[in-house]
Amino acid sequence: MEQQSQSFGSKPGMTGARQDPPENSPQALYDHAVRELIKDAYERRAVHHLAPVLTWALAGIGSDLGQAACGDIVMRLGAELRRFADQRQAILEAGEARKGGLKPQ
Image (cartoon, rainbow, N blue to C red; front, side):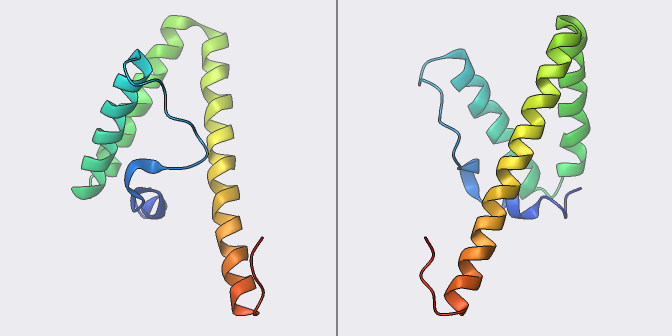
């Protein structure tokens, strides 16, 4: 798992199309805390230890909030994985275009 996600972890701050939450919101607090955990796990090469902890936490949330919450968690996970895959593909295509002498759009 750690090897598969090295490119994700090598981009500090996990930037992307996702917008940051309002500065003082609860979401911003949790977003910052999770980003710090992930950053630390990559620095320590311990992502394989963090992943089960995050999985357990999401399972607990899903269990507490019910089946619809579980579906929402899985749906959001799928959407984020798709977004990362699309970004990765766009970067690859831009590199190929540059190699071919074209300007990426």
